[in-house]
Amino acid sequence: MDAPEMSENAKQYLRWLIQGVPRVAFQSLSEVENKQLFRALAIPARGEVDDLFDKEPEAPPAISSDIPGLAGAGLKPWQLGQLGAASMGGKVLERMPTMTFAYEVVEHGKVKWEKTASAPSEDAKKWATEYVTQCVTMKRIPLNTPEDFTKSLPAGGSPPALTQTDFDGAANTLNVDVAAIRAVAQVESSAAGFGADGRPIIRYELHRFQAKTHSHYAHTHPYLSQPSLAAGNPYHNGTQVREYSMLYNAMLLKWKGDRMIDEAIESTSWGKFQVMGEHWQRLGWTSALQFARDMFASEANHLLAFVRYIQQFGLAAALRSHNWAAFAAGYNGPGYAANNYDTNMANAYARLTRHRTAGTHP
Image 1 (cartoon, one colour):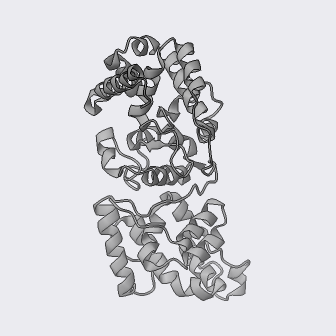
Image 2 (cartoon, one colour):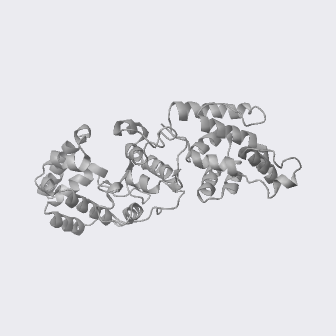
Image 3 (tube, helix red, strand yellow):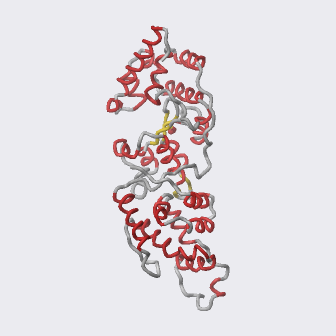
């Protein structure tokens, strides 16, 4: 399920849309090539795109009195938008028919046009068909979302890694051995808290997002919202680029006036120990967003979230006795065996203790 990289013009369109400057967003959209136009329009929530085409480009002030015959003509919002496009001139005026066609294709999920004055170009119809085939019929990701357009989360940095002292302190707090904690980290994130770009290792869970958003995006954004873990698995490709693309896209969706920033963060597991963001309050954070920001700061915060999780969910005894089945059931959920969490943790622990006995480091 490869997704094309987003062009700079498409990025600019989304940046202005998210910042609430629809007129400039419309101008940026007019610069997006046909091959990305349909996919770019599919990324935001449908309601936000509806608003863009209903209200922007805004008609010039007093347009009904400036242009004879318009007063009381009962024009629809999109018709006023086309008049507004004429007032902007240039590329917007030139591309307006194609942009309106693209909007209709995304809105209806099929190649159709009613609002355009003439039939779309063959090039536009070609890319419309490609969009419908790939993104509607096959439910593939429209474009990679390369950045947090909401500007809520930090960029990657050079966060400090855990030290042996950190591990010793956590082990003392939980009254478990260090190897047991390290075994969990090895299975959850291959013991890596951060990627090469300095962002925390994450996994975005499509079924959690669907539950938290009451299936609102199940039809329009299937690559972000699925009913079960198994149904969501095909959208992962084993890279952090994909995980962050899904997270960032989910964060910019809007519903009832609110962006789904908290819901996206809560639907994601974070850091070295892959603690789900939905537990932020129980683990002592003031908000989901603050939890996520702290996950960007250091592996020490990853470990803190893990320790608090073990304490809050009563898993210290299972971890202490190396009862990996009981631990995995509480840490990974009742379906832990399907992914061999218990076996993998047992094997990781065995490797770590062998290294310790032999006097070497894993």
